[in-house]
Amino acid sequence: SIRDEEEQAIALHNAVTLYTHWTVALSTGYRAVTNAFFDDTEIDRETGFGVISDKDGDDYYHTRLVWLPPRVIGQIDLWIHHWDFFWRHRLEAVNPALDDELKARSGSGEKSGKRRKRDHTAGNSVAGFFFFDAEGQAVDPTPDTISEYTGSDFLLPLNAGRHYLRSRLFELACPAEVTAAFMGHWERGEEPWGRYSGMSPVIYRDALAPHVETILNEIGWKAEPGLGRRSR
Image 1 (cartoon, one colour):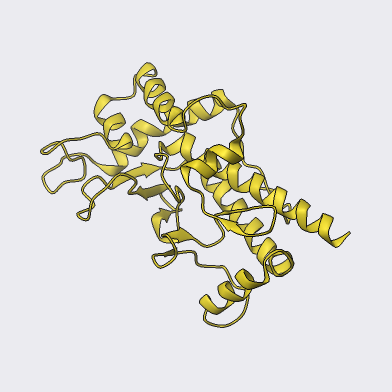
Image 2 (cartoon, rainbow, N blue to C red):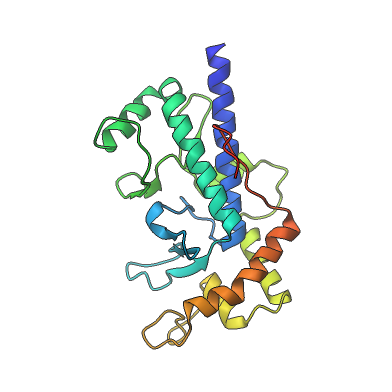
């Protein structure tokens, strides 16, 4: 039935969104905050660099530079492809009001999701990166929501991946200053990207990349498609 198709689409959307959340969290050390996801302006696909501001003040003092492995960028792109398909073919049936709202925000009234930027009037969210409840209502990806959709079988705190990542980088002998910069751990005078810092982003990336790739290989993480089923 049509309702069964809507429920299946919602279930798949939630699963792909949750998987993408954990892919990003476990590979970047993104803290358990609301909307822990990148918009298009926060990733440089040529270099693999991304920008995270997840525990910050108005001065963005702890905004940090991270490196995203190709498979993580691949997962983000697969999620974008999934969301474009969902928006074009499923959203109107699942949530007509949201469909109209997103078309209005696009400015053209058409379903075009090529550029995804944070909407500071809507909880700083990235278009589409939310869950749907059983009634088809959008639910923000807060820590409580992530915990609910992850399920009771996951017994660890939501920040466990961040702590594991830091510990494993230490075990793999990643340079301490690189790990600190990656995790956003510094005090006044230790800023890795400050005006007087001598840290090179390229050297930082090259020191970090093999260790992050090793961790993802150990976990067995790989990119997974959603609706549209475009493989990489």
